[in-house]
Amino acid sequence: MKVLVLGGTGFLGSNLVHKLLQAGYEVGVYGKSSIKTNPYLKNIIHEIEYIQRDFQLENHFDEILEGYDYIYHLISPSVPSLNNPFLDINNSIIPSVKLFEAAIKLQVKKVIYFSSGGTVYGIPSQIPIHETDSTTPISAYGVQKLTIEKYLNYYNYIYGLPFEILRISNPFGPGQRAFSNQGIIANVLGNHFNNKISKIWGDGKAVRDYVYVDDVIDAAIKVIHNKSKIHTFNIGSGVGLSVNMVLSIMERILGTNIFKEYIPAHKQDVPVNVLDISIAEKYLEWTPNISFEDGIKKMICSWNPLTNCFEESKRKE
View 1: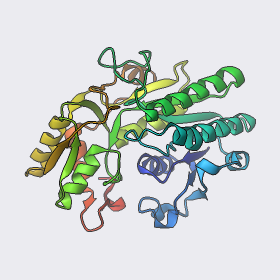
View 2: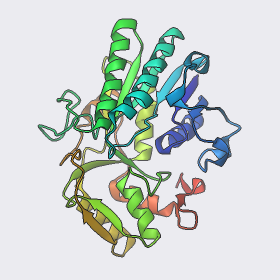
View 3: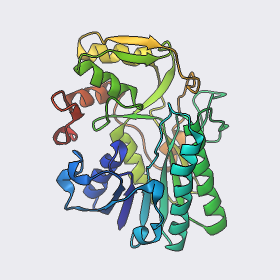
View 4: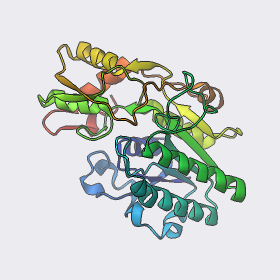
C-alpha cells in the first residue's frame, strides 16, 4: 500500500515516515523544504518519493494524490502561540479543503489528520478531557484545527470520505526542533546545552499532558486499520504535569539547574489540559509505553550540542 505524508519533513512527520517504511509501506513525502538538507530524511532519500511543493499555494492535489491509498495530513503553518486567523484560513484551512476534494475524486481509502488535543478543547470543564467534551478553543490555532476536523466530518457525511482524527497532546522526543515557538522541552534543552536562559510563559503551574513521539507514531499507524465507528481519538499520556514539575524532572536527570526566567503567560494558554485516552486504548488497542522520564533521557541522549539538533543516527535508541 502507498502512503503519502503531507508535512513529512517535520518532527512528527519524519518519525512517521521512518516507521511506515519499517512497516513495509511505500511512502511518499510532501513538503516545502529540500529533502537533501533534511537531517532526518536524507539517509532514506532513495526509499521515498519526495514532492517538494508549497501547501499554501497548492492547486494540483489531484495529480499529487494519484496512486496513493492513505493520506496523512500533518501540515500546520502556524503554532499555538500565534493568533492570526487570516493566516490560518488562507494557509491551512483552504488548502486542506482542496486536499479533501481531491481525496474524494481519487477515492482515497482514508485521510488521517493530526489535530491538537492541547488546543481544540479550550478551557476544560473536567479533567481528564474526553473526545465528546465541549470543543471551545481560545486560540486561533485551536480554531484552525477544529475547523479542519469539522470539514473532514462534513466530507465523510456528504461524500463518504473515510477519515481518522488524532487529537495529540504535547508530543516530545528526538527530532523535535529547538529554538522554535513550539515544544517547551526541546526549547529548554536547546537553551540549556547552549548556556542560554529559557523563558517560561506564566508561573509554571500550567498543567499539560506530554506524550513521547514513538507512542504517537504507533497510534498513527494503528489507526490505518481502524474498522470501528469511532474516528476521533485523544492521543496522550493521560498524565498531567505542571511546567514546574517538568523542569524539576529535567534538572534531576541532567544533574544540574536549568537557567530560566518567568514571563507573563499568553492569554490563549489554558491552565490545564490532560486527555482521557481510554477510547484509543479500547478501539486502537494502543497505549503509551514510554514514561515521561524515559522519554526525556532518550531525548537528551540524542542531543548533539555541536550542531544544535538531534542526530538521526541516535533516534532509534
